Amino acid sequence: MALRTLSAKSAAALDQELMSAGAFSIDQLMELAGLSVSQAVFKLQPLNQGKRILVACGPGNNGGDGLVAARHLFHYGYQPTIYYPKQSKNELYQRLTKQLKDLKVPFTEDFPSALKETDHIVDAIFGFSFSGDVREPFPKVIEALRDTKIPVLAVDAPSSWNIEDGPPGSGPGKGFMPEALISLTAPKPLVKWFEGRHFLGGRFLTPEMAEKYNLELPKYQDLDQIVEVNIEGGKL
Image (tube, rainbow, N blue to C red):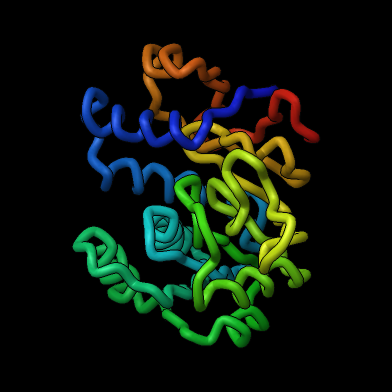
């Protein structure tokens, strides 16, 4: 099915409304997002095809989604490794980090070496609120994601992409086209330039909230928290 997209401004407004009128906490939304990401990994990288998952996390909410996903992946039977060079001092992120360390999930500061020892990568560096220049240490990480032959799943946005205008024309993200993308809550305009497999994770919106933001609620199957989708006007 094809779905309409939600601008960065509207996506931010929807998140705020979910945490006010919708009565969701940020912890709940991050848990739902990370659960959706973990299910997308399971669809793309079955356990019998390789259990090693490298999760690259940025300092914001996108990175938090990656931390939650890694915890779920561990419990599914995968072997996640976390690259999280700009660890937030926010109490929520510290709790998510501790949960992983309690499970003995390894953290690494050596991204190139970790890249050589993984079967799949989760790009949870920058999400829909990203703007401006890519700052250290992420330029070389994004270049490595662009150049690797290992499949990459991007969370909400391929890192360095402009949310409205898609892939950058220059810089470390030029030419970066992950194998898969999972949009959280609703697709963003950048998906019109995306050429890989596209999933949506948003099985918690009320029909009233979806109608207010002119969103279509897809039909999720059975217990799935994600659904593979098409985009109106896109290339898929």
